[in-house]
Amino acid sequence: MKRTHHCNELRPEHLGQTVSLTGWVHSRRDLGGVIFIDIRDREGRTQTVYDPSDLPRETFDQAAALRSECVVRVTGKVRVRPAGTINPKIPTGEIEVAVSGLEVLNQAEVLPFPVDDPEVAGKVNEELRLKYRYLDLRRPEMGRNLRVRSKVATATRMYMDEQGFLEVETPTLFKSTPEGAREFLVPSRINPGQFYALPQSPQQFKQILMVAGVERYFQIARCYRDEDLRADRQPEFTQVDIEMSFIDREDIYQLIEGLLKRVWKTALDQDVPTPFRRISFQEALNRYGIDKPDTRFGLELADFTEEFRESAFRVFNSTVANGGVVKAINAKGLACATQGQMDTMTETAKNFGAKGLAFIKVEGGEWKSPIVKFFSAAEKAALTSKLGIEEGDLVLFAADQWLNACEILGKIRLYCAEILKAQGKLNIPANRFDFLWVVDFPLLSFDKEQNRWYSSHHPFTAPVADDIGFLKTDPKHVRGQHYDIVVNGVELGGGSIRIHQPELQKTVFEEVLQIPPEETQLRFGYMLEAFKYGAPPHGGIALGFDRMIAILCGTPSIRDVIAFPKTAKGTCLMTDSPSAVSPRQLRDLHIDLKVPKKETPPAN
Ligand code: ASP
Image 1 (cartoon, rainbow, N blue to C red):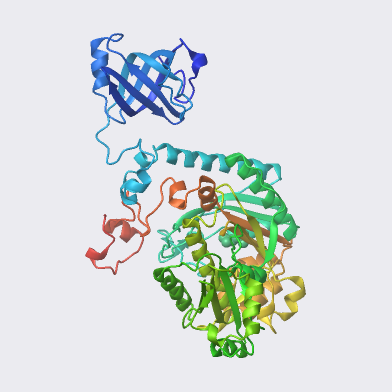
Image 2 (cartoon, protein in one colour):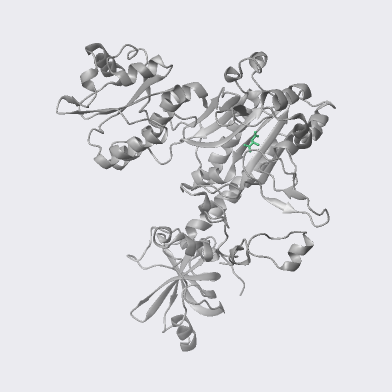
């Protein structure tokens, strides 16, 4: 008998029906001679019962011998579970199937880790899970993640289609344009000595598609960056990549707000209020010390530069005299921070080049701090009123150049929030999502070591029209038409209105970024040429698809929402890649390895 229902389908209304289920042996219990086996398929699980008095001996013995994760087909009658044995935790918990026929479709050896334990992720080391990824993906928690991913991809495609977008695939064998992240190179066999590069994003192709008159493009695109992997990065990842012609920033905000509304409704059945708040880069730094602020809690930075300009405390007054700022946060109720926690915060400040971390602990009605003796009554009054200082508080200071001072306290703010959360003093509901747009980024940032300007976003981002005149005279103050979408302190994506005038683009490359003209020609010549033939004004954005799914699934790691992710060393433990190749393959590709044999990547 073919499968009649999936394992999440049967309810009391199916009472008495003869059904057939297929799936894996999820868990079993032997109770007083009767065997209970939960059969699991993609959709859920159902309890099946093997009673020796109703079954041929042979079938019962077969059931008794079933190991976890064997593949079976069972036939039997649906019945309602006796009172007291109902399992309210699963949708099929009111019924069971009294088995009359059992077919073993395949055996399973003893597994390297159990699939039926929801806590596996916490107990089994991740390398083992990655090596046996097909077993890890059988776990219902991981299956759910894949499903959310698929549903969100479909919702995205439908929404973008409704909005008039064309899905266009762009090449993954691209040209090397060394800039920003390191690229993966692919040797060309038929063009000896030449290489393709895997794209870091479809940026240039999508802009070319605008020149091609596509007007509205999107792609759920695979991108590649050969970076040293940080905790939550992958060498290949997925973006929802978008580009539009004849639009301004407001059009992008509206489009993305609509998309995220749709996605959150689809995945979580949540109504996301729109429009999203907007905050300038400057304000984000001033208030939260970071350009992707988590606004679900306060703990905001306050500025005391003016108050301490004439202070008797030399560290503060000299910083201000040197053009720096004095900022502070009040970690409410954290005077109880341990020495270890204080050391961690001090270390954070030192990592930014600060000499130490000034603080005040308010305990026993007293301000305990090595520095308060330098503070005047007026300075203390200013601190109390701006920070609302009370018994039990911990005040932390940063005195430095503006960006550094903000970033130090931004990091410390997040760290304090973690401690307060652990202590139960800060409660953030799991289903709260604070979306916001961060806007008005500086177009350029200065690289002290190389003594030159580089693009804060990428070199195709248009300056704010009013600021174009300052590109050569005052680059620091030129704002870019760049925007980031942030949720709960995570950068979900970013994009910009682009430069579409070839002369302005050439000026940015050559005069602002100081890329030599020959190099500009080599790397971007085709783009500059394309722009000469009627490039429409355009702009776009890319959303980190993996990160978005991780947020929707409530998991901290994007590896949990990618079917086959790489390790932090960029390896795939299941297939053992990367791996050495044969001398013949190397010869075909005109490659002569300089790596001594034993140092070629081990086959693991
Ligand atoms: N290509 C950019 C990125 O990958 C996004 C964009 O500007 O559309 O970050």
